[in-house]
Length: 379
Image 1 (cartoon, rainbow, N blue to C red):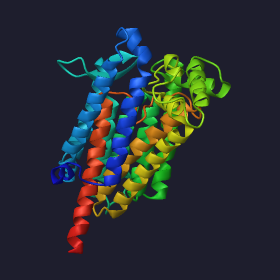
Image 2: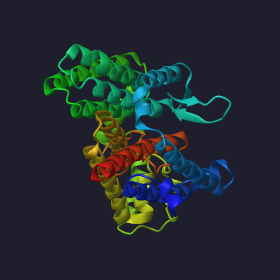
Image 3: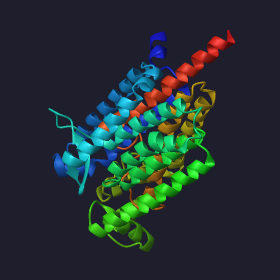
Image 4: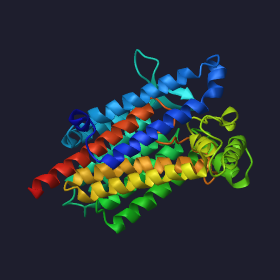
């Protein structure tokens, strides 16, 4: 029993949420991949159950392993991580795997596996910002240094991501803004930064739209289609709405989804709609509540942190998870245009799930360190 406790260290509530999400993920992905199995694998539905179940088990192992890495390690390699993140994004633009007219994936050498470089880049940027902000706490009045050391890296990473993925680029900007805000950058300087970001964003998207470079046309079309209720994504939204309505309060039952056969990406982008259909609005609301509880637990960890670096690091990591989760759920119930964001720790995925698990490993390590510090003080 003690050996098991030693494996699952850190905040116990967060661990419970991770386990609940993992169970729901395995059940819902297995159910929602039926049509895909019949289309590509002669109806071998067990293929996805075994594959995704294995990924989730490996993910738990990654959480445990990452939790053993001292937080100081990320502080010491903050600059290296930034260059790795930027380098991966640049390589993806040059030679990435193209899917749906966007080069977002890098192939892992000597394997058939791919990963989204932006997933790695987001974590790298958060670690860099946490390190740099903690170093600059006594010198945050120099706006020139703020621009060079903080805003420029954010702008560079956003610029590399935005050509293929607007929603991820906006997530990077929003998460970074809140890190700067908590990092005590003055309201005046934050105002300058926001104004500059808006000008650059509008100008950049305008140039891309006029020149036909990148996916600006797609973004504009999605926003227009969302407003008018017409266009290419109407089918997806309509099928998601049918799933939501047919689920009612208690749902059709686990594994009894009908819309999984019609809804594209029902196992990833629109998995929340399948959860509502099968589990009902009550259980879907419980999923939302679990994310809110997760945010609350991590907020408690942040308030107890004594290190500025740990505070900024955990803040950036949880914001990244929460924003992505809320966007995915909002898209599924037609509150936002289609973005392509998955539901963290629930949607089907490979390396993206493992990277999310690594994120939880870092958060749990910080929670463990905080508890140890408090225990030492109590003695």
